[in-house]
Amino acid sequence: MQIVKSISVEEFEELLIATKSEQLIDVRSPQEFERYRIPGAKNINIRDPEFREKIEQLDKDKPVLIYCIAGIRSKLAMEIFREAGFKIVYELNIGISHWFSTGRGIDQRDEW
Image (cartoon, rainbow, N blue to C red; front, side):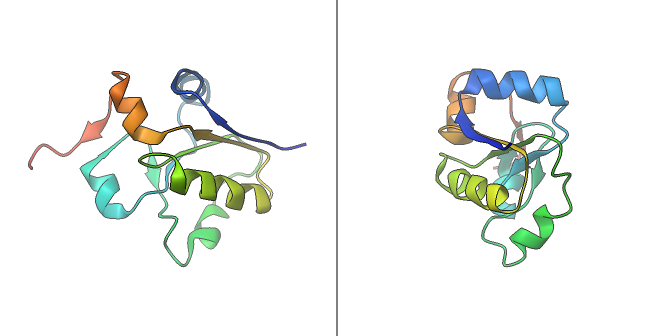
């Protein structure tokens, strides 16, 4: 049985704590990721031609939590993870923009 769904910021935060952010994946570009990200995230760019090969390095039996800026790319990534056979995939509905707007912390570069 697979669990693949979009979840709220509150649910996402609870799962980050429960999973220790072990497979927290930011699917944005490396440039976006460098500017700011949810603490503990790893970057696997969905637009990378090797995206599918890179996600195969993850553990398909452990939960995967994914996000992008507003939820468009992460919803696409969620489907790719499902097709690849990952058992539990959660996508942050509305993305990191919603995460930040609700007062949750991000890592960000100091210089602008």
